[in-house]
Length: 172
Image (tube, rainbow, N blue to C red; front, side, top):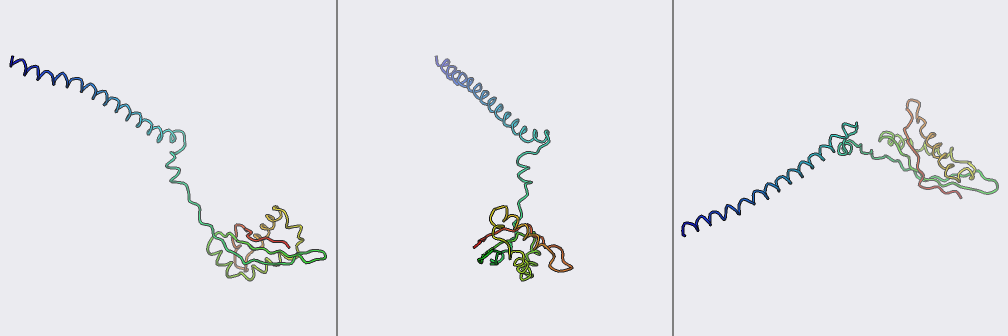
């Protein structure tokens, strides 16, 4: 009887150990399937856009250019007489010029008295009715841009003013 108990004890761990490898192998198979699906998804994400002519989203985001910081030159507000019948009317206007580079900004600062004179001549004696609608103001901004872009000296090119933005616009 003593000899059967060691066999029974030895047999018990063997029978308990045999189901464990089956669970372990099922778990291992499930893990391999999950990893395989994840790898296939990652491969599809990377390679399918290239096959269809596009690029993966991460590459597009890396190539996206960052916009350049705009360069503005603020002009002191101007007050000019407007052409009106019978009573005095005025335009008070403040603006900012968007320029393409620092050299243009330096030229504008250097030639500011001449630019202000050009503005006064351009703006004075306008009828107040020509400055009412948003379209009128957009047209005026383009006229100002063209007038100020003209070369400041015979040997100089155009200034390079990209746009004119109004920050004060009062007709009285």
